[in-house]
Structures are given as C-alpha cells and as structure tokens.
Length: 482
Image 1 (tube, rainbow, N blue to C red):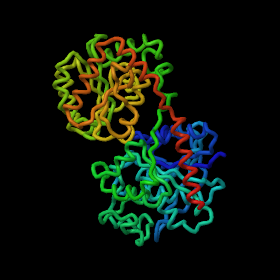
Image 2: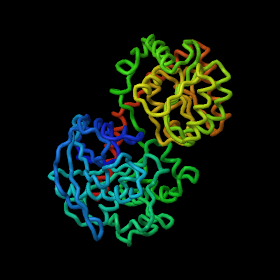
Image 3: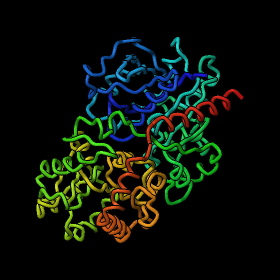
Image 4: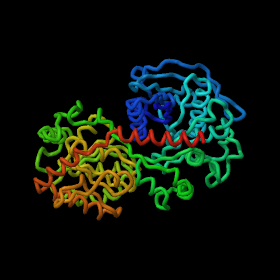
C-alpha cells in the first residue's frame, strides 16, 4: 500500500545546496516516487534559487503563521523541478531573501518560522501526509510543534514523524531569548525538552519528540551513542537506541555513471575501461599536471576542513609528494588549508593541481580520471564521495568510520575480495600506511584489475535505501496510531 510522505529539509537539489543533505533530499523523493508512493518535499524559498529552472507557481498567499504572541505572513509556491514530486517552497523574503542559506544571526527565527509554516500549510491543504520526514537541525522543531502546539489538532495530531541526523555536530543551538520568537512554550525549556546546557537546541527537540530516529549509516548510529562522537547528546541517543536506525544514503546513478556521464572526456564501463585512461589524460591536462599515464593520480573532492581529515593529510603531503604520484584537489573550506594546499601546489605544479571552490564538471572529471580517491575523515556520518568513486573504478582510501566503514572493505591480494583501503587509527601514520598498501596493489596488474572490477560492481543506488526508509515510515505510522 502506498504512503503519503512529506520530506522537509533546508536544502534540496536542484533548488539549493551547500552539502550532502541537499543530494539526499533531492534523490530520496525520486526513489520513493518510483516505488509508487505519494511523496512531496518542503523547503524554504531562497533568493539564490534560479527562478527559471525551478519554475514555481504561487499556491497560497499570505498564510498566517503564529509564533507565540506574534505572527508572520508567508506565501507557498509549488514546483515540479523534481520529476514526479511536488515541492512546496515556503516564501518569506524577510527570512530567506538572502544570499546565504545559513549563518545568519536570526537563524533560529528563520527555521522556526519554516517549521511552523509547513504545519500551518498542511492544516489548510487538501493533501495530508501520513508521515513527515524531517532532516537535521533546521527541521528539528517540526516534531516539537506537532506534539505541543498541534497535539489536539484534528488534521495533524495523527501525523507520524521520522527525524534523520545527517551530522550530529551541527545542532542549531541558540540562546533562551529565542523561545518567544519561535513560539515555543517555556514549559518545554527543560532537560526533557529543548533545553541544552542553558540553551535552546533544535536538534535535541527533534530527537526527543520524533516517533522514530535515523542516521545515514549503521556505523554512525552506533558511534553517536559514545562520548567520542555523541556531541554531548550520547546519553539521550542511548535512551532512544531502540528507536534509532541507520539507513545508508544512496547515489543517484542517473548523474554519476561513467557510461553516460556527459561531463567527462570519455565514457567507459567495467568491461570497457579504455575511456578511463583518456579521462586521466584529460584531468592531467586540465590541471596542468605532467601528462604521464603510468603515474598514480590521487583525487580529493571535499570540504577542506579538519573533520574531513585535512589535518592528517597535511602531515602526509610532504612525504607523498616525494613519491612518483600526482594529486588533484577540488574544494573550499578553512583558510589554513587553503594556504597550505596552495603552497604545495605552487612548489610542485607538475605533481599537484588545486582548485579552491566548487566546479561540478571538474568534480566529475576527478572521479573519472583519478586512480585513487582520498577520504581520510575524522568522522563521516555517511559520505557520498567514496560510493561515487567506486562507480567510476577510482579506488577509495578512507578512514574506517561511519558510512566509510559500512561501504569500504579492505582489498586482499590473496583473496581478491574488497573494494578499497582503510585505516583504523586517525593519524598521519595510519593514512600513509593505507596509501602505501594501495600503491603496492597498483603495481600488481592482475590484482589491480580485480580491485577495479570489484569497485565498479558495487551497488549503492537509492532503491535499496528507499525501501529501508519506507519500512521506517510504516513503523513510525504504526507507533503514532497506537
């Protein structure tokens, strides 16, 4: 039996994106719709959206959104930019008519308004979801409002909620003075509510009030119940461990497929790899690296931050670049890593190509043209880069954590099994050891070819993950009804 599902997120491809949440929130609804479910999406309408590509139309004008003692007026627009999925855009220029998606001083009011506006729109809509799938801190108040302000509402009281943590490190923590502005009653500012060390915590609200919880990999769901990864919420997560599930993200193979990718110089498949050599030559040419097909080429497409392993990679780079290797880096992040990587690239331009920023075409070319893909993350809730690189026969070298641990198995030259290389200890020594094993394997042609075939045979498409989410939606609905 098909379900009525509303997925709420602060960013969704193709409307707005700063990170992996947008990819998930754009791809999952398509996969759910393909399974026959009536799935819809809600997100804010940002000024940065391309009006021509999203082609939205006004659905509701001047919707009143109560926020404590005050109220706001918003419009609701609808778009079909995701094929087969209606997307509702909460339009409030005062709150979202800015260049940046996040990082504004009034983020609490902005996303509090978004959460409440979604529910007010549903109260007046002919369409009602059976379950709302809320994602990350920006939607954390949806379960809170449902079980407080709307607990007796005949249209909303029975709606179930699944709350997904994409990254526990970002929780949406604000001062207690924001309570009146977001319409949260003071009675909820307790240890069993949204209070968090004297502050208001949006994510904690979602974790307490949602019917079920999930994270984006099974390993991460276990890790966040520990002091090391729990970000001071491990106690709460442990008490809800029976309601906490890990569902691995998928990859949109319509976009990421070397056989059809229009952004790479040559297409290829697992049984026809000639094009990969041409892609390597094209990448070397674009980044002005020495055009040497025999030299191992490492790719890195990442946010340039300590969490992504840039600290230990910085220690490894001087030794790595002493070898006969090349490095292609694309990303943006912390200034210290911009400076450090720029210095290395300037000193060894034939060995290291660096682009600071985001270039979608170049990202595709790095996945296709590299031999290895680096993801030495300190922690990684899921990660998409390692799964994309597998599809392109580019071998991941990862830290054994979170979704990286769930997707990458060490290759054994004797067994011929495995799809990449990983290291346990978060250190430069651990990372360099994994790189050394990878380079040794590349020198054995039969083992190297087997490894590439293993990598490209992996299936991390959205179908399996979407079915797992449907199972959680049904469980949340049953819990809400009981």
